[in-house]
Image (cartoon, rainbow, N blue to C red; front, side, top):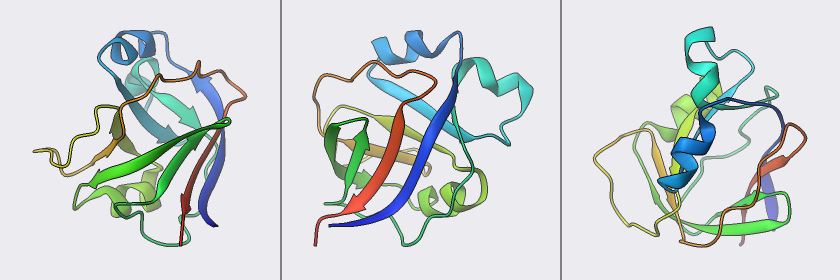
Length: 122
């Protein structure tokens, strides 16, 4: 396994729970605009070492999720802003170019010290 993105959550917006109920989170690094912070999981700025691809894993704390879809703008926005919308529904497609879909599993509680990671399995 190779870690290609690793960060720590610094802030969980006041409205994140509403998105979690829809099996979704919005990621931004600490450059997130003020008007988006209450809907975002904000994390420390870090580098995306390689592109995120289908078959990679998202890890939140110790819970892993297989990536099932990667929109065509995801790697660009992750590099620039640490930004993506992640949906936990196992879908293999999305109309949103900044969307990452991962397998459907229970989403762990995300706190201001949670670890976020993307890793390649092979």
